[in-house]
Image (cartoon, rainbow, N blue to C red; front, top):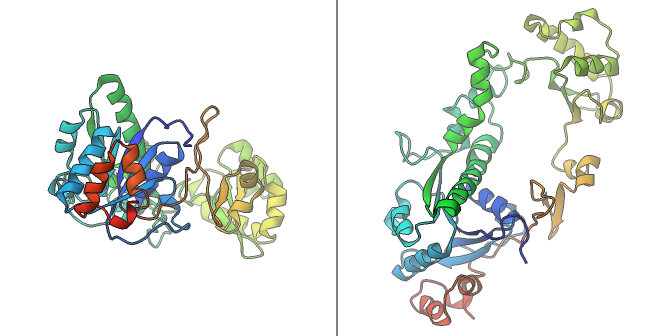
Length: 382
């Protein structure tokens, strides 16, 4: 039994990589019935370590088959949302583009996830997260003085992509339920990454931001907002921006040097960082955690992926859970009346050909016909 605030939502996800599966995971974690259309013959899938595939059902179809295309359109007739992550034009060539789908279901929300968007000079070009955030100014702002550093694929794929797609889909569903009008949601990771940079463009316009790395308060330029290595080689993070938090930092570290009164003097930052680094390097990470952990210094130890799930705060909130021996993030955010849940394990490709199609209104004879035409595999139909 699915649970969460989105249990009334029926979603078709066309299998992809990166932000598409993550978006599907987010929606499934909050209770949506997400049926993923996989490529027939595309492997087995279903590994417990495929965390972002958790919680949905898989129907494997040969989309070169007219019968399979018609089956997809019938599924779209029943859906609130469909989303895909192919290059512009691919779904149209398959006969599954938004124009066709919206004629069959005028209330349908049709989500399109790409790196560059459906239009523009780069629309048909390949790319990855690093490229999408590069043209927004985000990558330029992250890293050392010597070079930009990709912040994993959190800013483009997952932040600017999956989260903006989920946000856009739910906004469009709200509109559709009020008006009966579906629409296309064009989600470009480059657009989302640019949107995430809104505050920094405001800072730049106001003169508060220098357009270079490690020269600003939030990019590691300031001594009071940075990470520091400890005596044991491990690291801590300090974000003592506000004056009262900065004063507490000086108190907790035992610093009495009057030069530290120049908190916002950019010219003093390099020297103050060197001095603070020497103080931090005198104790281990755990010693500093004992001194500053849970205080208003704005402090946290820098944890590895192995350590993070065991941290007392994460453990108390059950931020991480274990499923089939795999430690993974629990559903987020949290709801008081309709809590989300991991709805099931990552599916084996085609594991739900019969059950999902039947639940979505396909008759026994229609399912059998799909098998006879080769649109689905015979072995997935009982």
